[in-house]
Length: 198
Image (tube, rainbow, N blue to C red; front, side, top):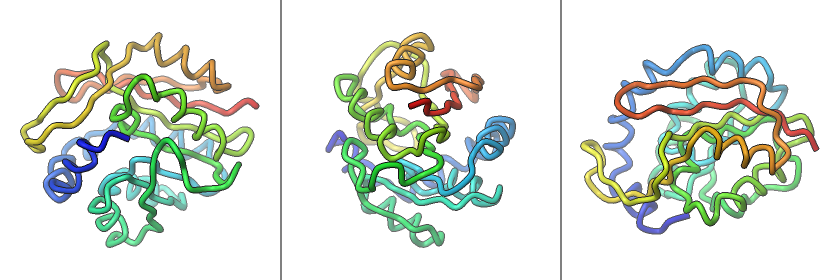
């Protein structure tokens, strides 16, 4: 994962936690419901950040393990009572087929496009056959460093078209079973639920 982005999250973890309250309060319940209905076992939240989405999944009955490259983010998820691990999204510190579900919501967008296939290889590896992937990425075509009002330090963002994501998922043996677009502000969030088919 990008070191500059990790350092930004280490410096702004608490601010980011506060900035995302409104986003998760308005997040579509339908997407959560479909994901939860398909998972039968433990879920790995990769790029878990301050665990606001993990809290939603836990409230819906799932057991969630948090993984993030930022030590400060992992401190927050640990405070919230989650099993939490500092780790690299491109080299997940778990055995093969360890999880029934992987939740990767707006975490893979901080990985360079040249490395995205490695990220999906790792997700595929730790998921059980028939396991469920909940994926969220932001629509666009560029790869760039950006700042935002809540996080005024640079983070790497890799944006994707819906077709790009679909091709990546097919390449890595995922069947798309549900799609939903969420547009809380100016940018569209492309939300996929997939099953591992190999």
